[in-house]
Length: 411
Image: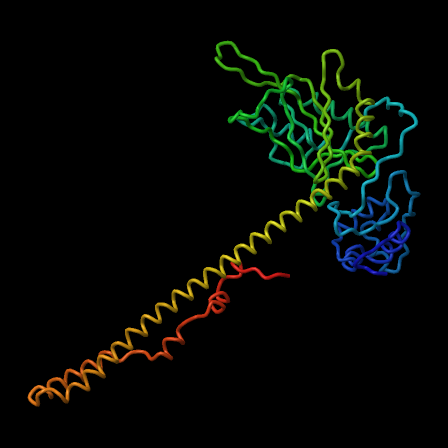
């Protein structure tokens, strides 16, 4: 088996993860242990519990968890792809079309994420620039709520998450390795044109995306308590305050995709009465997301190739400019050396002519001139032509001395 480019079905991956620890197995695949564990979760492959390998080493025979039957929408094979932006390298698969709507539970099931969220939000305050609670702890569900509506917002989220669970769709916080992205949301009940609003502030948002998995397709969820503009008595301007009504956003969190839907409370029909309709719309979204991922990655590759081509062209032009510049510098330097050589040549010719004319002068001044000639020769001792040419640098020598970012070599 080629461990660098594995192509494993669920049965083979199950056999491998129960034959040696995931951390050791992951290194043979050139991935991290958490990465391989995530692949196992996506393929619904159980992994050994904590302490399993210690019991096995002690001579015990701990029980293995059986490989469950593949659920609809669960991938059956792990296929590595160098071009995929999805961390698990597994294309998300939407759920099979539903034949009937599940019966709602009589009692809303408490969701663990919201139990933590209630404590986190209850200990926080609204910031000076927003009416929404802004917890310091950023690993929490994606909801925007005012302090006054916190209890109602948690209850609304509980009912939504519970209904999604009735359909078999789990709500969770996305892993950091997923590299998911959140879109901007509008908190105002009646959206305004904020394009030219230089004082606009964006509300607090948590770090991870809150996602519901439809099959293995992640659909991002954001619950926003909408705000309204009011003018308090004695005020000259309006301010925002929570309305107690909600807008629900569902979006594609995958990079290079753009898909977002929203639904909001109305006086005639609250969102809680539309959950089945909303979930049906989310299912439709989940079926279109895999195609959007492929289209987005194709556009990203084309854009990357365009940028690389532009960068290469920029480097090529910069290289040509560098070569032309060092050629001119070398040419100017050569001209200066020639001028230096001409000066030396004139000096030597002057001294030679002076030495030849000393014999022709009167004897009483000859000794004086000979002394002056000796002083002049000592002062004008300079470089030879060989010394001058050795100090000159050719264009190639100057080019080679340039920093690497000013040069470009064809691959």
